[in-house]
Picture 1 (cartoon, rainbow, N blue to C red):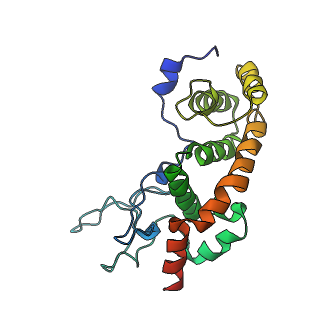
Picture 2: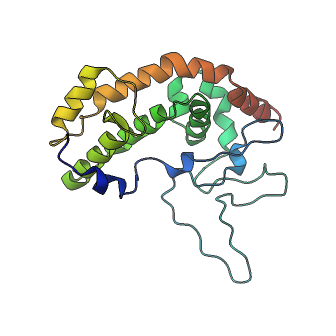
Length: 212
């Protein structure tokens, strides 16, 4: 059993899991509606203060002309639908795009395997950590959330990899989860990504992009 307290862990937030990969709206026809997404997307920018005489909105969409299509995410430098067609080139195109992460997670959620992208993203954030205390804290959270044998979002990795992480979790390094991340990436690229391209979610986004 790892040295850290699970009770302490679950009292902590999970900043490495993008909260914006939460809910995604669907149109009446079943297509995924990225532009009406109701939660921020991996956004570190503070929300603007309400202007005098105006009512603030909880939505990150800056403007909306009424059809739900003209708004833009506060963190998107451009229309998120611009890159939809490129997602078919590789899984990296999907994972490297904020809108792609949202759509791919929505698909994985439908297959009951969203822990894969959440773990992969958590590892990406983990490798950017600069201080030892933060690294230790984040390593313990990732371990409890995804790797532990009773983790609530346990990833599908081999026993040897899981045991190696468990053995070294008391003294983590920035490469502690590299092997597991590569295994999860391979699983997404080999099994999940091809199905995503054929899914109603992706095909619906393609139709929407083509109609703009």
